Amino acid sequence: MRFRGGGTEFTIGLLPGAHWEWAQTETDWGLRHLPNLPTEEVFTTPDRRRAEGVVRATRPLGLSSTIVRDLELRFRDGRVVDVRATAGADAVRAQLQVDEARPGSARSRSSTATLFDENAASHVADVEVDGFEHGARRP
Image (cartoon, rainbow, N blue to C red):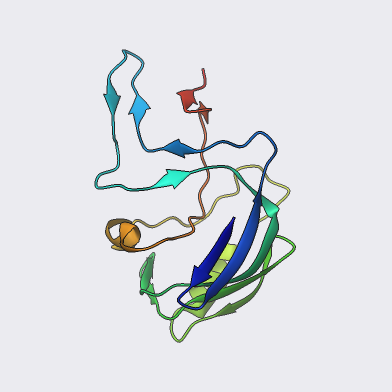
């Protein structure tokens, strides 16, 4: 996939067998619903090892109690190699310091106003998902 615009020039490959999903889900008793409204998002499974380029946030981001402004992340071989921001860069760097050998590494998560503004433009989300496979809840 390729993202361009607003200071972003970023490409990322997909994992073999990846497919596109959307926010609709179904409960164990068959009720279909959209748990995240409003939403216009679709998502898939990228191969983080194939992330290259620059991602620039065009809006301020809330990260715990820190406001990050003018964030720019540079990726090489799937890793963030440079973090720049006019405010909050150290908070982003601290969040990126995780133990990759440990599955489900504990990371600081925040749903500050970014959650409400995320549909205003394209965005890249750093998330961990447990319990779902191909849109269905795993036992």
